[in-house]
Amino acid sequence: MNFLKLFLRSIALLPGVIQGTEALFGAETGEQKKKAAVEIVGAAINITDAVTMKHIADSDKFTQGLGMTIDGVVMCLNASLWANRS
Image (cartoon, rainbow, N blue to C red; front, side):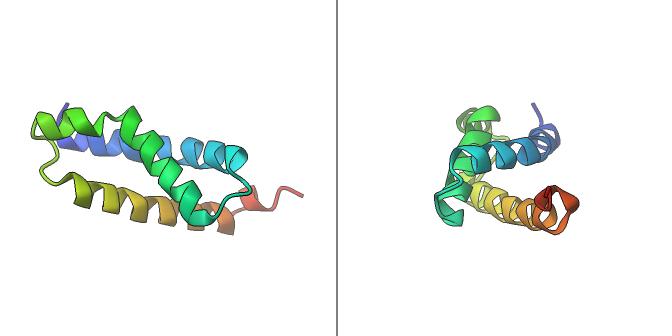
């Protein structure tokens, strides 16, 4: 799988993972929920395999960027009608 496919796959997973993480870890801190979401997405896209196959050269930076992307998706979801379901 080339990097662009890997990256787009991780982005596509984020909204569902974030909603699921919120449902499962609602009482936890935002940082704990973010860590869980990063781990779930990382496992789903097999970051370890991507590093081994040289699709990701720096897994720490990729994970950091994924965390930043999760923050952005959460910000968008919180600003949308999704957050105001009442």
